[in-house]
Length: 106
Image (cartoon, rainbow, N blue to C red; front, side):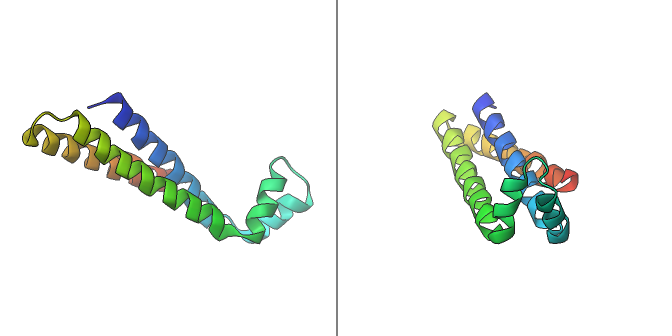
C-alpha cells in the first residue's frame, strides 16, 4: 500500500474528527468562550454565526480525498487483481482509521 494513500486516509481522519467535534460542541460553551476572549475565540465567533459552512467544507474535503484515494490506487495497480486488493485494504482502512476511530475520539 502506498504511503500517499495512507497520508490521504490520515487527512480524512483528521477532517472527520474535526467535523465531529464541531457537531458536538455546545453553542452555550462556545458563547462563553467568545465572551472570555480565550485563544481561538475569533474562530469560535465565526462558527457561531455559520456552523454549516465549516461542516460543508469538511465534508467536501473528505469526499475529494476519498476520490483521490481511489485515483491513486487505480494509477498504481498493474492488474485488476492488485487493484481490487488495494481498494479493499484502502476501504477497510478508510472506514476504520478514517471514520470510526476519529468519531469515537472526537
